[in-house]
Length: 258
Image (cartoon, rainbow, N blue to C red; front, top):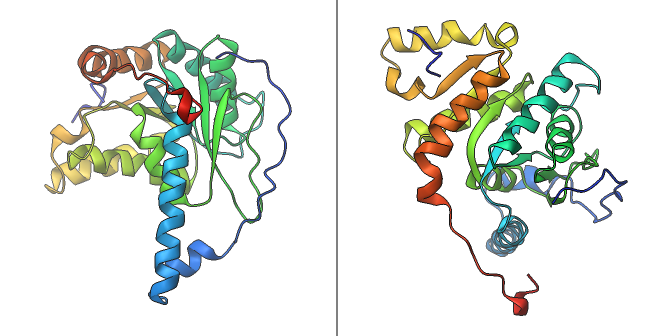
């Protein structure tokens, strides 16, 4: 099995998010049923958060989502690789979208901004707060992980998976699941840095061998170390195949403060 077919602004300091965040709210929600009134209020808060997110990202244009570790330091090989690749993504006409935090997320936003492209993020508020990085022209602070994930997948035309941990793996397999089940279009998924992701490849071979998945579901996945190869993969499956179908210009309404 072969998987190779797999507003520009300057960085500025950001103010810490000061909204009081109920650290255990999502945890309690996932522990089982609560009173009907609590469930209703929680559903309303989730709806409001979705609407706020839609308003923030409505005019960002088509995005490529870049995922990766928050622990990577500036100047490291992983950081610089994400920075360079994201600069190339903006030259294809895409907005770079990240989780809005430090590490790989900062590197991707930074590369996009330095290249004169659009750079946005969907940050998550945590009990130990993750501050948004300084290289975004626009960002949204989410209280709930599942809202954040929906927003990032909603606006993405493709997914770049840089080296990362469990959260990055979760985002990678979420993308594959949505593609396999046809919940999203067949967008490209790029695992960048072969040596880091090499242990994943035998797992895919085993899945196909045991008939646990179809080879067709993996044809959009690319393992690579090459920026040029990654950008060509995005161009093939995002620009050429879907851009004209999905790109639509929306008018801004002054009444809505847009």
